[in-house]
Each structure stands twice: as C-alpha cells, then as structure tokens.
Length: 106
Image 1 (cartoon, rainbow, N blue to C red):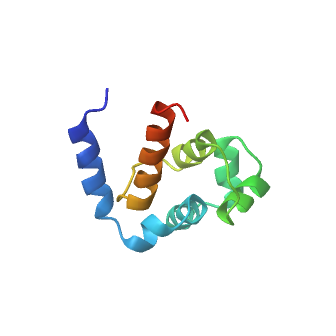
Image 2: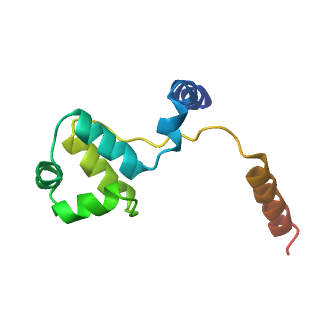
Image 3: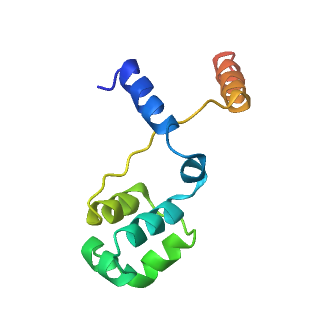
C-alpha cells in the first residue's frame, strides 16, 4: 500500500524535473529518451512488440493506454510511472462540489 509520505517523496522528486519535461507529453518524452539512447523507432518498436508506425504516431502526440507507454519505456530500459504534480484548486473545488451534490442526493 502506498502511504502518504511515499506520495510526498514522489512529488518532491518529480518537482525537481525541468518544467519543459513535465509539460511535455509522453510522446515527446519518449522521443527525447529514444534519441538520447540513439535507438531508432524501428528498433524500439520491435523491442516493444509493435509496429514502427505506431511508435511514430505516439511520438507525434497520439494517445495510448498506459500499458503501451510502459512497454515502450521498458524496451528502453526505463520504468514509466505516474506522479500527480501540483494541485489544481479549481479541479479540486469541482470534485468537492460534485461529491457534496452526490451525498445530498442530487
């Protein structure tokens, strides 16, 4: 089970990442890592068990299930994780309002 302090440590580590990295989509991050490791899309695709055209589309911004991203990052020797960064007060307020409405029966 993940404890609150684990989340705090993960957030602290992730917040030290450059803003450009945290604001980039997973495709841009994948491309940067792949290029840093000097791996072609074709080689990455083969290692992840998918088509090179799929890797190309993902790097250009297509969406995919988390498991697809995990397979690609694992093929590059990395582990993909999700870490919630920052706090969006507007979103939290909306969720709180929705929860209150649900509890009130509306």
